[in-house]
Amino acid sequence: MLQGVKTDIRFPNLGIFFSGVGNGITLFGIDVMYYGIIIVSGILLGVLLACFRAKRAGINPDMIIDFALYAILFSVAGARLFYVVFAWDSFKENPVSVFNLRTGGMAIYGGIFAGALTAAVYARIKKINFLRLADLCMPSLLLGQAIGRFGNFFNREAFGVYTDGIFAMQLDRRVVGNDYNCSLAVLEKRYAGQQEALGRIIEIRNNTVFVEGVEYIQVHPTFLYESMWNLFLLILLLVYSRYKKTDGELLFLYLVGYGAGRFWMEGLRTDRLFMWGTSLPVSQLISAVFFLSGITLFILSKVSAMRKK
Image 1 (cartoon, helix red, strand yellow):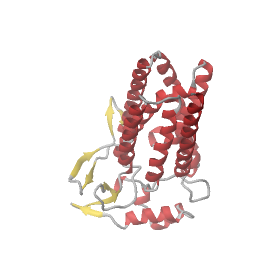
Image 2: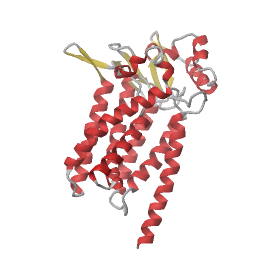
Image 3: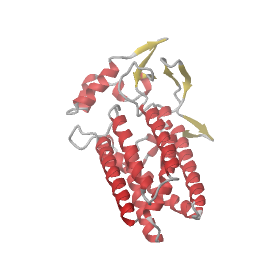
């Protein structure tokens, strides 16, 4: 979306309408994106939650803050690197743009992998239990993800396929990306070999609606679905944390729950990243691995706990 452009966002079947929604503000002559404000808010609230839970568990909250400083830095770098690796065609003409985070382009899985690696290294250096640290951080990660997804609302991105269902969201076609405004020939070249992805975008383009002279695409608000799913998982983990028997259980449940939900939601999205030269969605593959790994590790942790009795 163009900086400073304000357009309506509509949920006609719910009777909810947002008028003149922009994607940022200007402070002292500097453009500040809502996406960045929301991401930072999610991070800060996540850190506060982790500190609160650490204190209740008898762990010094300063350790969480110390870890968070490293995790945030490397997670942002990891999220950007992951996106760039699988969307290199968007950067190869101007490699310097890789460092311009203001243009967007972050992938949560890259951030998760980088954060996990940071946690493993930090735990080893500080000689603390990695699984215990992970369990402390999982609810915070979900809180940050639940909040952060609303940045996609302001950016008009991370939406799904065409729908006329109850949650159908209408976005001004002019500000939702070049895929919905370029010629069909350009679109077909861009998605050569990815017929399913091409078909989804064409279906959206063929089902636009006009409201008071403005043309809107009508799609699933998958960013909202994921935010609500993450909030549900957050509550589930917080409740389950009272009954867990071994370290790592919250981590394993996160892998199961987030993997399952993200797999389904990625199946609806139109802006997916693909394995190089294929039509295989990267995030769906990783989600499947998360889900299967989480189930396996959770069962093994339970079996191990029973054997120790």
